[in-house]
Image (cartoon, rainbow, N blue to C red; front, side, top):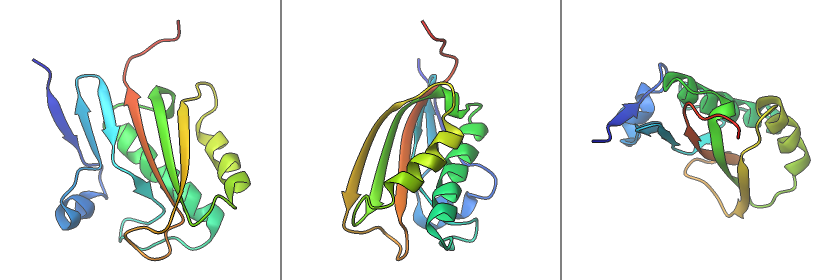
Length: 134
């Protein structure tokens, strides 16, 4: 039987308690991450485009680490950008700080808006723990 474990990193308890969703769910060796955005532990949106992108990836990293994973375990990446992908060059520079050796699949979308004003990007991914390169 496969197990299902809810992943709530330290500092993300308020997301679970306030909005009633899990930052991550580990099913067997596969980790499903909820979309992470550039807001701090107090749910305040981080100011500045690059800073917000960094914070979103840091939030992804918190969920990965809480499940015993790293960015190298990520196999699928989805990103949603507010209104347009005008800041793609900046996003790519930030993304490349986190994905160095193993690159995931990646799909990006431009959307009309997000659940909180001021959010510029949402990052969702899936990771498989314990995989090796063929």
